[in-house]
Length: 94
Image 1 (tube, helix red, strand yellow):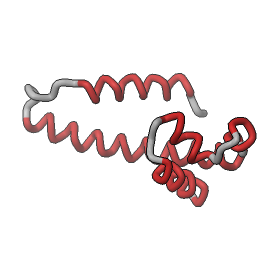
Image 2: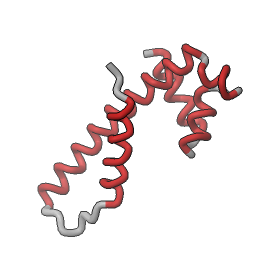
Image 3: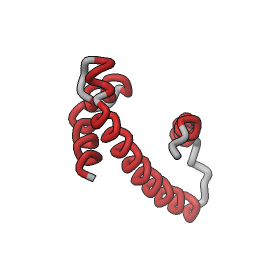
């Protein structure tokens, strides 16, 4: 089951992590954090592709906003349109 509240919580936690002061973190902990963050980003990329593909399949953005999924998500999120379009295409193939 998809939990939109969980997604909102992830965004808030990611914001906290992005602003965290890591200067005093021990080397081993810092290295472990780097690996954990890479794994988390990979999982989030997969989730983004899955959600984007479902939006595309339902034509939500086309019908409700007059834009293709990648273009609409990029505009709303302030991200690069080409990368967002590619993610939607990958999700659709998967």
